[in-house]
Image (cartoon, rainbow, N blue to C red):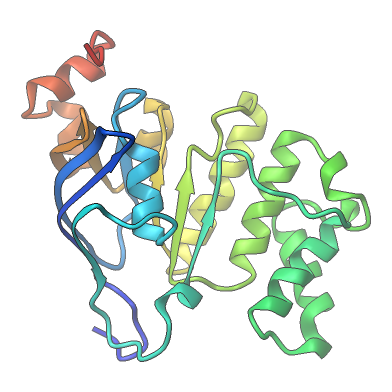
Length: 241
C-alpha cells in the first residue's frame, strides 16, 4: 500500500435508513486499487445510495466507512464523483474544467492549458467556449468526466453515467471511462446496462433489497452467479417484490 494512497476503502456492516425505510442493510465490502468495480441491481436495490455513502455525500445510519490508505490528508481531495445528470455551471465548457482545477488548488498559470488538454481527450475541445448548459446530454457527461479526470482522482465514482444517453453517446462515455481506469484511477460505478457491465467491469457487486448478495469476477458472474436472485436478474425476471 502506497503512503500516498487513500485505498483500500472498507465498509463494515453499513446500513442506511431514511424516513423510516431501510435502504441498505449490513453491507460489508472492501474496495482495493485496480479492478473496475461495477454495482448491479434492480431499481430500488440501493445502488446509488451505496455510491453516495462511499463518496461521503451521505453518512451511514449504521456501521462504519473508512479509508485505510496511508494518505495523511483529507481523502475527499483524492476522489471524485460524476452523477447521472451532472451539474453544469453557468459558464463555458472550458471554464467548468478551469473552475474545478481552481478549487483543487491547481497552479493558476497552467489551469487553462490543462483544461484544454482534458477537453481534447474527451473530444470537446472544439466546444470549449460553448456554454456548458447548451451542450447535449452526452456532451455534458463527457464534460463532467473531463472535469473529474483533470483532478487525477485516485477513486472515481460513477452513478449510471450513460442512463439517459443514446447508444453512440454512451459508447463514447464508456471509452473515456476505460481510459481513466487504464491510467490507474479506481473506478466504482453503478449501471443497469448488462452489456456495459460486461464491457467495463473487472468485478461485479450485486445488490438486492439493500443487501450485497454476491461479489464475483465479471466472467464468473455472467457465466453463472451463485445467488438465485442474481441469476434471476440476469434472466430479466427479478422484481423488487
